[in-house]
Image 1 (cartoon, rainbow, N blue to C red):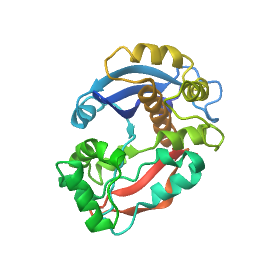
Image 2: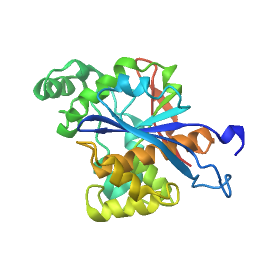
Image 3: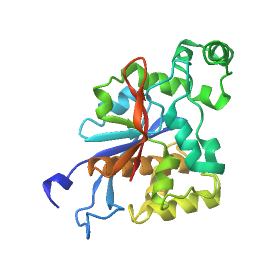
Length: 251
């Protein structure tokens, strides 16, 4: 393996216990590294209680990709990346939750957040989006435009769409068929993906879909390093903190 192919990347997904993180690197032997999918090996995984812990434990990683909104609208208009992602996924678009707007970060409960959202955007806050609020706040508290070069937002369903020859996945991720569909897509990248899922499920509050989503995020990170990735939209908006509102996906 050439030096430029020797790197570590991390894929991160939220879980009930906090954050599930996989750290991966390119396989020692790659038959044809110019072609995707790029073969990866799992180095280790861990569960972090908060995002600051994720950062402290991934300092050796060249890139970290996380399934969480980075860069938030102030309410004047929705994020273009979310609109583009929903258009791509078609009937599976419901997996793209509209993220809370930035003023909602100060809210202590759903009713306060929904009231703020209605005031600034004209729409009440989706309950699933509210459940993401604490994790979004954790990331927003530490992220800066400079750090965003190292921490990139992905969405697993968009990564799986790319891995599935740019076709949406047919089954929802929490169903048995959906899990099998995603495992089949990841197997050329992680040859032991089923063993990874079995081992990583042992920590409490880590679901199979959390593990598969984190692996998809790690694969996306590797493709970014190899300059085989694009963003939704192609020219991302900047939010009031000068953060890019984008979703990165393998190209």
